[in-house]
Structures are given as structure tokens and as C-alpha cells.
Amino acid sequence: MGAVCLALAASAYAVASIPAKDRKITACFKKTSGDLRVIDAAKQHCSKKERRLTWNQAGQRGRAGPPRSLTPEARHFVGPRVVGSIPSCDTHLGTFCVGDYDGRWDNYGNGYAPVAYFKDSAGFVHLEGLAGVFTTPANAPPPKTIFYLPSGYRPLNGTREFTVRACGGELDYVDVGTDGAVTASTYRRCVPLDVVSFLP
Image 1 (cartoon, rainbow, N blue to C red):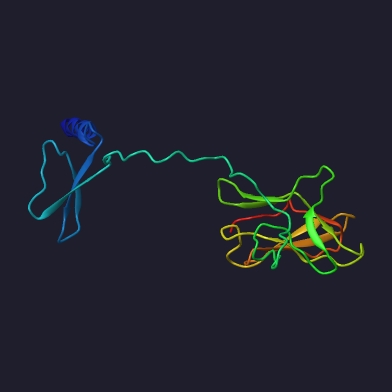
Image 2: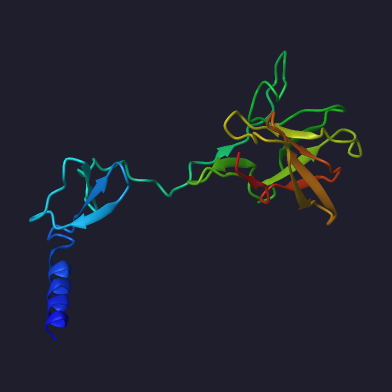
């Protein structure tokens, strides 16, 4: 009976003092054997052959970082084709491309959203809007490239391909290359870009 009482008393003492009131836990680590024993830091000490270890302690509180914005950046609207000595959309990034037969890409209009691109708060690139192609004569093939994305909005590990339902209902593809080229496989008059979304 006396042994049971002694064991209960020792158990109550251990619970009351380990961890300490500040929730810290202290132990002694014996370097030669690797033995570890937990101690009551208020009444016990490590020997010279042991190393004192303490855990469950909080460090100094650091400065608060800047608040994270959950708002996506403003939309970058694709601009009209640049007219000049070098009217090339791969040098004038973020502008519509011009092809043969006086063909060009532009916003489809008629109340549909204009073509734009932006990044959300997680870093994903999104395209949106309805791109339209205009050619002379009307049945001439359009230029394949709609426009070029600038650096920072391009895929880094290979071309991304997306399935779209072009005007007329057929399934076609929109590719985004590592050079920023946004190209369409369709010869239809317009292509929706809202399905294009990727992490660079």
C-alpha cells in the first residue's frame, strides 16, 4: 500500500512540474551514450557530461509582414495593331497580330468582352474576351497568332494547349507558347479565350 501511495505521489509531482509553468520542457542529453532524460528545471540540473536541451519555447516575435492582397491585378487589354515600318506583334507585345491578305485579329465587338489578360493573387495567368478575325477577301485564312503575351505571363515549361468551341460550334485549339504567342488553330471568325488559364 505504501509503495502505491509513493508511486501516485511521484506521478502527481511529475505532472505538476513537467512541463514547467511556462510550458517549457527541459532535458539532459548524454553525449557519449545518447541517453536523454527529462528533468524538472526548477530543481534538477544536467551534469557536466550532459547537454541541456529545452523545447516548446517561443522565440522573439518577429515583425508583421505586409498584408497579402487577394485582389487580382488590373486587366491588361490587348491593343490594336501597330501601324508603322515594322508593324509586328511579336515586337509590339500585347497588340493584335496582322497576317496575309490584310488579315488581322481584333476584338470581336458586338457587345462581347474585349480580349485581355491578367494574373490572379495566386499567380495564375488568365485570358478572357472574344477575339475576332477580319480578312480581305472574307474567305482568306486568318493569321495564326492572335497576340503575344509579355514576359512574366508566358509558360516556362512548354506550350500549353486549350480546347475551345469557336464561332460556328466546332472544337478547336488555342496554344500559348513559351515565346508568349497565343495562336488559334481555327479558321472561324471568332475564338473565345476565357478557358485559357495556367500557372507560368
